[in-house]
Image (cartoon, rainbow, N blue to C red; front, side, top):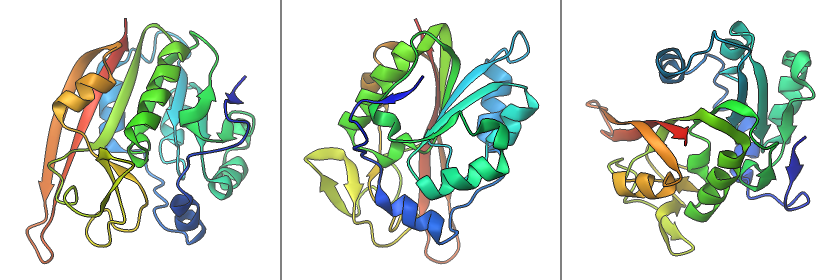
Length: 230
């Protein structure tokens, strides 16, 4: 059972609803880093894995967890994309929910694995911390959180846009570059991630950069991490 703590009020960025309605950012292939991390760090064959994905977007990772015969749940803020996913994956109509995952109460001590690929990064520090606190309670002891592509302060777009609510790690109104017109974007440095995941045992923390050397040169910098519930 999943309930919205705010009775339907959501922090979800409306920009993403509009993006999906325009058929943009409709990734349909599982993200390679996520597949690699789950394969490397999670014992997915020992039992039926109970997986929670924060912000599934267009459902890129769902076929992967279907292949693992996982018990899959997701909370996604875009109603239009959830309706599409209910049609595409009818077996998950009861487990892919419309809502603000930063403000949800999940079943306690239930999930073996929580994953996020670039969804929590569309929120402020306070919303991310609130979500992680709720997720921690939802995870079984010894279970893992895998975060993929959390934007880094080394990203070339970090110096653009305007600060949100005196939160130096969250920007909006980025008008050009890799992250333009995507609403709120959260960036992290190492210490900030250590603070956000202070309840967890961080087992893996990797920083990666990709630089476009052609026209309109930019640097994409992000973090991948694995954190365990102690």
